[in-house]
Structure formats: C-alpha cells, structure tokens
Length: 259
Image (cartoon, rainbow, N blue to C red; front, top):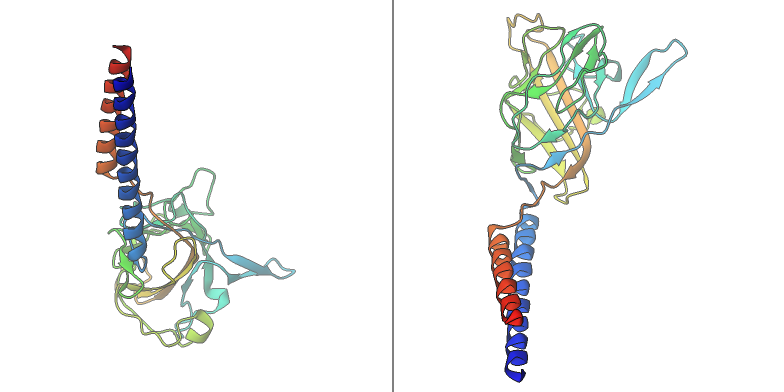
C-alpha cells in the first residue's frame, strides 16, 4: 500500500508539471500578441461607432460625430458636415484580413432585411448603398491600412471603385487630417496599440474618370471610428497535446487504482 501511495504522489507531481507547462505555453502566446500591438492581426475587429446627428426644426440633419463618408458634391476639395453621410456598424465591423462581399444596394431607403458586413447599408441622395472591400484589408499604425479594394455599390449600380485617387482636403483641421498627406489606396490609422482602446481611420479617394456610375472624378472621404477588439486567440496545438497526455495519464492512474 505504501508503494502505491508513493507512486500516487509521483504521478500527482507529474500531473502538476504538465499543467504548469501548458499554462506557460498559453501565456507565451498571449505575450507574443501584445508585443505586436501596433500591427493589426488577421481577425482583429475595428468596431464602428455610429454617426451622431444635429437636426433643425425642418428635420434637416447633419453629421456631427462618429463614423461617416463624405462626398465632395460642390468640388471645392473640402468635406463639410452637410456633405457627410452617416455610417454605423454592419454585421461584422471591419475584420482585418477577412474577405467581404457587397451588401444591399437599391433605389429608395434601406428596408427591413437589408444587410452589409463592414458598415450597415447607408442612405445617400434617396438611395441605398453599402461599403465593402474586394481585397482583405490589412496594415498597421505605421504603414496605414491597405484600402485599395474599397468599393461602394449604390442604387443598384455596379460597384464604384474607391481604391485610388488620393487627394488632400482643404479643411483637414475640421476633419482631423492636419499634418498628414494621403497616398493612393492607404488609410490613415490612429490607434495607441492597446486592444479595447479607440481608433480613428481616415481615407481619401477619387472615383476614376469615366466611371459608368456617373461619379467619375468625384472626391470621397471615409472616416471610421470606434474600438479595436483583438482576434479570438486559438488554443495552441501544444496545449491540445498536453491535454491528450493528461487524459492518458488519468487513464493509467485509474487502472492502477482499480488494480
């Protein structure tokens, strides 16, 4: 009996050592993610704060805060509050590295059942559109985000490409882009690198001349803001191996005790 008790203690010690190793492996994975906080990893989510409004007695409303896109309707290279269309989060928000598809696009306002992944269907000049990207969006706070696949299907028309044609708004002081020069296909990402903290994403583009949508040569400006959420951390393969070993060890212990 004493020998069996001694074996039991040895087995318990081994069990604890295996558990400790598994925990260390898991912690090592979490630390490595934190070390790359300035880089957005695949699966990270830019959640989108909905736009805020200010309306007058005639129900004329302008965007005053939150996320929006602007259209330079009078071609003065500026985006004023009255040229902004409100945006809010779609079914997923902006998931880094994910493939997205076009959402609702038709005449008239959004209707029940209309959906879109990154942003909810928006309402511009009496018709519905949705923002998506033809390529997975990736990047960092230093390199910016690759927005070269940014597209906007609207009013049932073919997608309007918004992946190039950088321009510099003359009212950057109001838009928050002072001191920054936009480049083709790159969105400016401001974020302190800490998950759960706020971000700002600004992107300036121009529709290609001659685009069949009729928007050829028109300046667009996308502004998203909200909170950055980390991608779900998968359990490392090593932990699964440890788990399998633990199950086997428990089986051996039960057999010995039964004997």
